[in-house]
Amino acid sequence: MTSVQKIIRPDVLAMTSYPVPDATGLVKLDAMENPYRLPDALAARLGERLAAVALNRYPAPRPLALVEKLKRAMKVPAGCDVLLGNGSDEIISIIAVACARPGAKVLAPVPGFVMYQMSARLAHLEFIGVPLTRSLQLDVEAMLAAIAEHRPAVIYLAYPNNPTGTLFEDAVVERVIRAATESLVVIDEAYQPFAEKTWMPRAAEFDNMVVMRTVSKLGLAGIRLGYLAGRPAWLAELDKVRPPYNVNVLTQATLDFLLDHIDVLDAQAAEVRGERARLATAVAALPGTTVFPSAGNFLLVRVPDATATFEALLAARILIKNVSHMHPLLANCLRLTVGSPAENAQLLAALEGSARRMGNNSAG
Image (cartoon, rainbow, N blue to C red; front, side):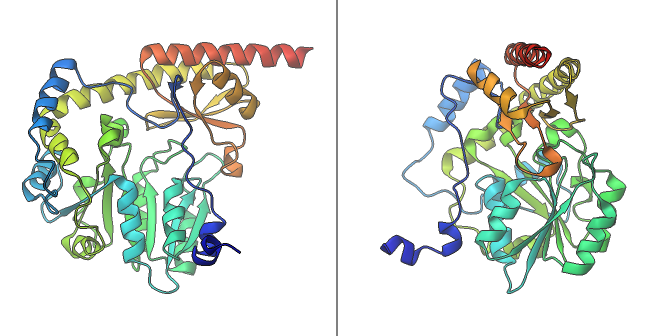
């Protein structure tokens, strides 16, 4: 037995690392990124701003002026604080570590964002997944029963959900929040720019709820910035787990600059929403294809053969996400990120070609 096998935790040895495929030379439609870059003039001004950043100094661990600016821009209600993270992934990890009392559990609907379960496992928390309904809606009665049985420390509700795109009904979400009197309920609003609905105005209303967001889907995936809004009592404790210099100086400077130009990012999100509607209509017209309603910047699509379709698109140099093996509810499902008009045209052409070949094969 090697020293690695003696020292690394057995559960870690048994795990596989988070898969990130190489997208070099491909039309990248697998990771729900905004397809639009900053306008050239704005990018040049940002470059000047970043050139003046003192790279020899540690970042401010609690950049108060930046946090206040973010709170104003994102309409964080009075009575709430904000915690910054290196993407929402780090915030999820912080929550898991801070709440990892012996026997504690994390609960979330499944299929859902894989990092809820992964972070729970790494913090030695038991993860409880509650299946969605066949129509991919929140099974509220099953959720309430699981809350009563397991009394989870943390409950995640993605609003909308990834990878399904489902925007759970507000009344159903509120039932879960009110029932979870012994839990912290995290409303994950990663795709809020495309849902155009939010729980942020109510973040101070409940003493057991916080709202988590990221700027990644807004068009800034490369800077890795997430934030959590909620009552100070929660954030003060979670802040104790946060690494002291977790948000670097370039990320802070980029955010500070672009909060003054949020209208540019909002306009890009509006373009993506329009493309989402057009792409959904076109894909739904393909034979044997079902497009599920989506409030994100992606579409969940069921096809006759997910693996064959995925491989056909890869051969056409288009990378999407095959989610068909993630959960039984996702059988033969693919997740398509909404791209630019040109990217979506390429995607649609490849899907149409794949559908024709499958039709010809079945006819033969």
